[in-house]
Structures are given as structure tokens and as C-alpha cells.
Length: 436
Image 1: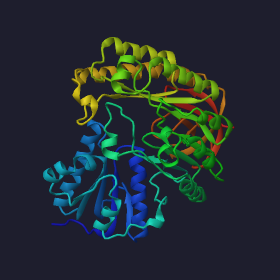
Image 2: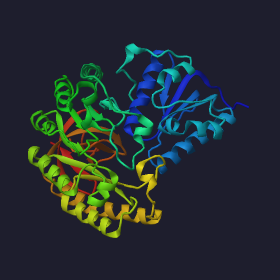
Image 3: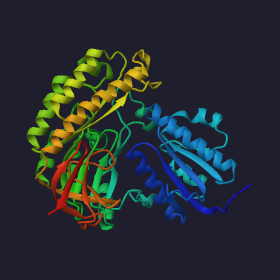
Image 4: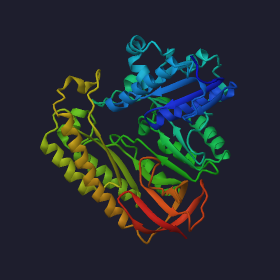
């Protein structure tokens, strides 16, 4: 029995996983809006007749969160709180056949490339003329900006090619047009994302053209910051660094997952790079772009990782002094190359190693932040919560990096504006300051 009245033409979209999934949800919502649906993104109102869950299938924790979310809305459907539950995204792409058998309460499952079919299931038309248009789920002053889909890399631990397919670049002209629309609507920061941003252009133009793309986007009036994520280290196109140094609206920021430092681990991971080449690349980046902030990620507990390999990683984190760093516990994923290896590091030990890496990085982060006290930075104001303005420098991406805090009781700022802020004190992951 239904306990409340549902809005028949209303769809709630729930997004799990990474920013690339969020981008896909925004495209879906843009199509639904143009088909005269009322659409919301995780508002918590729960009065929509249809719920679309965009799932993640990257690692064990993400898969479990996706499954739990599906089950939760499946129960809501049984109680009459939801009429339809539709599942899409990476988990659905990878495990659709199993999910259909195990979750009969779900009305339909779609993969990562099934948007037209999903829309048809909802009684909507896929509108080709809307390519590049979407309904932002982020604050309007920044937007994730997907430059390609899929990945051709052979990394042993990664299932993304199974879920997202081969690398496909988007045309530069299409993305410039999208950037102009976003800028006209108030977007000030573009966060460039892809499974592998440095491969950009090889499939479409026969050569790497990430530098050309950055130039074209930086020429769009109104875009104050362009931020580059997910750069693969092997074969990194060094001309990108010249553009980053020369263009003031391209953030001195680079997200480059290195995953490990031990040559034995890097070879088994099939990363195409060594410790020495990684160090050489980092040195080149820092030399060519003075003041650049480097973000990286590490994997702890990969099959065969010894205590010595872990100790080498810990020491390296302290030596390299990355501005930002995250770490994942290795997840044993079927159908990947590493699945043939013995997953011989216990889960508890994986967690311990992750915690040790983050403790080492915490000390680095505090030291680097303390060195910023007394300096003035350009800050993009993101939000106001509990009497505090929260913003970011060009060295910080939303959700994952450091923040700048300003007392809202003493100072007035505006969300979406840039402000010059002098840093007065520092913590491990926060800077506290006052507007200049």
C-alpha cells in the first residue's frame, strides 16, 4: 500500500562512485529535463515515482555501496514509496546478468553506454542536439568536464576497461562549445576528467592533443580555472607543462596516479614505468611548472607486496613530498590480469598499510601547509556552513583536497567568486585565512 502520493513525471537520480559517473548522471538529467521530466539529484525528498541509480563497480567497497543502495530502493518499491527502480552505470555494465537474477525488484538494468535505451525505458527521446548539455549536480561555479571515455591501458589491477570500454576522445570543437555554454551559465572552473587524460587525441587525431585542448579551453571567456585530473605517467606529453606554465587560467595542479614505487610492484601492475622514471618525471614537472601542486594515489596490499615494498613506499612518500596523496587498499577484481595472482596480503594488513601511508602524508601535508602561513592565495569560494566560508586555492580540487576556511561572522564573501585570502594559520588539511 502506498503511503504517499508520488509525482508521476518526477525522476530522482542517485550517483555513486567517481566524478565521471557524476558527469554521466548530469547528461542523463539534462536529457530528462528536455523531455519535460521533473528531475532531481539526491535531494532526499523521495517523492519521485522513478529512481535511477548510477552505480560504481571499481573496487569492493564501491560495489557494496552500490548493492546496498539498490536494495534500499528495492525495499522502498515494495512499500509503495517508489514505483520504478532503474539501475545503470559500471556495476550494471559488469554484472548485469547476475543482478537481473538476484534483484527481481529492479525494473531494468542498463550499462555505461546505454543512455538512449534507458531514456526509451522512461518514455523519453534521446536528443542528439543536446550533446554536451547537462544539468549540473555541482554548484554552478564549477563543473566536471569529461574529455574522453574508456581506457586502453593494460594495468593489471583495473577493471575500468571492462566497464567503460576502449578509449574514445571527444572532439575539441564540441568541448569548446560546451565550455562556452557553461561559462555563460556562471561556471568559473572546469575540472577535466577522463579514465586517462594524457591519452587524449590519439584515437581521434592520430596524436596526443591534450595541450591543444587545454589551449582551446583556456581561450573561453569567463573560465577562470582549468584543472587537470587523471594523468597517466608513462608517455606523459611534456608539452602540457608548457601550456600549464604559460596560461594563467590553467591551474598549477596535476592529478597523476603513480600507484606504487617498488619496481617489482610497478612491473607486476603493468604500469610501463619504473621508480627512476617516476622520479625523473616528477622532477621535470616541478622544474617546468614552478609551484605546481602534485596529487597522486597509491595502492597498498597488492599481491606479493612485501614489508620491504611497503617500507619503500612509506619512505618515498616522505621524500617526494607530494602536495596531495590518497591511498587505496588493493581490491582483487575478477577478469583482471592481477586476479591470476594470489591475493596474499590480509585485509587487516592492507588497512594497516593504508593508514601508515596516510600518516606519513599527513606529516608532509602539515609541513607544506605551515609554509603557506603569511602568504596570500587566490581562492574560489565554494560554500558557507556553520558560520564559515569554505573555499579552495588553485592547488585544490573539490571533495578530495585541502580547503581554505574564512570566518563568516567577520568577513563577507560570495559563493562562486574568487577572493584573495591571506593565510593566518594551518592544519594538516585546512588553511585558515582572512580576505585581503
